Amino acid sequence: MDLRFSDGVIVDAELRTGETDGPLLAVPAHTTAAGTAVAARIWTVRDSRHLNEGEVELRIGGRRMS
Image 1 (cartoon, rainbow, N blue to C red):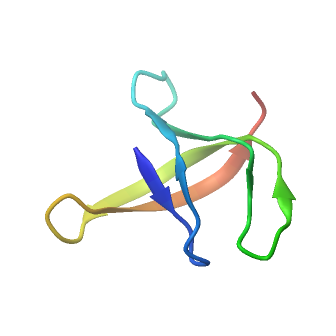
Image 2 (cartoon, helix red, strand yellow):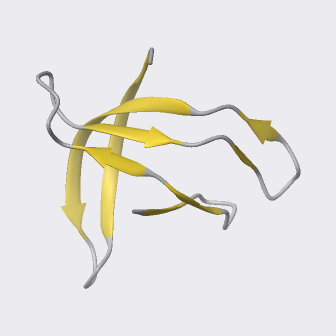
C-alpha cells in the first residue's frame, strides 16, 4: 500500500493483517523530504477509518521489534 507521510513522502508499506495480536504496518527504510534517513520499522495498527474512496487513515500504536 502507498503510505503518505505529512511531509509528502510516499513509500510502499505493507499492511500485515494475519498477525495473532492484530494488524501491523511494515514501513521500509526511506528518506524524509528534509533528507533525513529513517530505518525500516514495524508498527502496530490501533485503529483505521475510511476517508475518501481509496484512502484509509491508520492510527498507529507503538513500534514493534521485527
